[in-house]
Length: 154
Image (cartoon, rainbow, N blue to C red; front, side):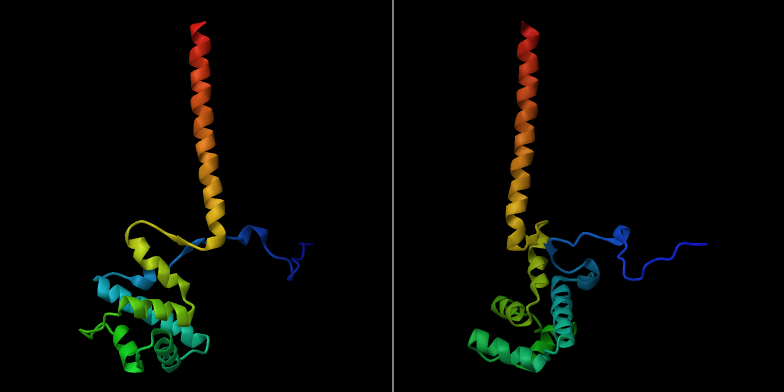
């Protein structure tokens, strides 16, 4: 008789570590010129915001409040359009978009272009600790090699 699997038990082998890197996958940014990639990122962030109940009109209103200058829904629509020539989002508007949508994954795009990553603050100490431990191992290896060299001379 086969064993029954408890439907409430989690499969420990199915666990995957959560990424500490903030950003969207390459499937989201896609290929093409930089402007097109940014337009896709903005579009994706706005789609995710809509799924959380925040429409583009709300985003425009909140961005206007954040920036102190008028942002309209048609402006936001242009930022997501691959066809619009004047679709580029300004840096301050990009920051406002992150602020009002809460889409921190947008932060990872620019550093990713330079082979860098953005991580949440609560990981910084762990990363620094890892770097210190790596340095300690290197120093210990160097010390060990020097001790062997000195002992070999005796």
